[in-house]
Length: 435
Image 1: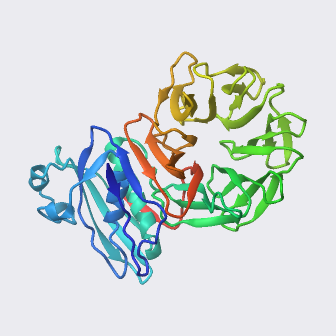
Image 2: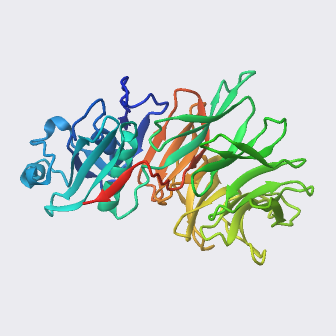
Image 3: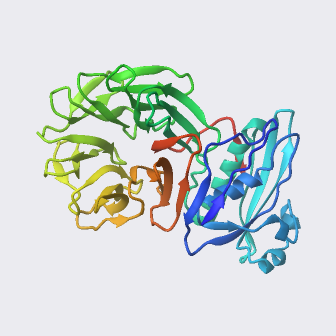
């Protein structure tokens, strides 16, 4: 087992304290050796190469060459000697440098090389405020990852989760946290003495929704991240649960018992009108949108035990998706529109599985703990985050959709649950151009 520990600094613009450590439990057999040469530092700004290297290693696809084993330290393209890196077995080489453009701004130049082919794959310049150096590093890691794998990187995304402190005590506290994808830069956007459930991102990444019990009963709350402004979206008598934003951000799907039975509804966010989608006497819950927004996949016990169903929103025609096993729930669709992930029970143990939307396919088990739940998919469709247990504590896990790479993210601060991976996030604070 490989353990990656994030270094902590104490100076201005250094990396802040984090609650997570990342452990690689399982990596692919086809790991590529990379060499990330130190970029250097300027005026109290940490070397971004540390974060770039860390991002690439935690993908499970790369192992980094130790700095002390490097034969040279190039920072420009004309300083690269491919022979040095071939001798060391490095398949890919990342070099770069930093330039202080003002007291508050820094620019980072980078280049990525295929050592065996002796050619440059990509290069660019990313610039922004010095306090955004981690964001600049994540952006560069995304560019490196895409250049090598042809898959868009997701290191610049965020994760949202619920941290529970004092579980089992008389007065537990619940924190709705947002952090960088590596667990750093934690921001608590809500603290409550009441449970927080089912957090979900809006597709623009500017707002979220979740279920709160702060009023004494369940309510679906909309929350603007930047301003902290909150709004009650659904507070009917009975159950208000499982919100999920539509791909265009104009609606949410949710579960309500406003008509006496748990049913799936949609809500138009512009005019606050509701539309009832399911009309079955069973329990219909946990709706999630397909990537094109034309239908919902939900959990229902209408067959006698929890299974997944899909309903077309135009016609309300419904078909069953899962037939293997007696418990299949909490579906999440993949960006390719052909596959989904869900919680599947095997001999009283709950695992995250991958399956085709084709009803004839058998599910493929991705996780191996006894209580894996709440899957959430990275926007590039390559990785899945989920809640699991380590002993009696709740932690987060990450697994690749092919099951080859698995990581654990334990927290020292309490129990972690209900993860939600953000969409791709855009920012005008970092400028980037390829060279």
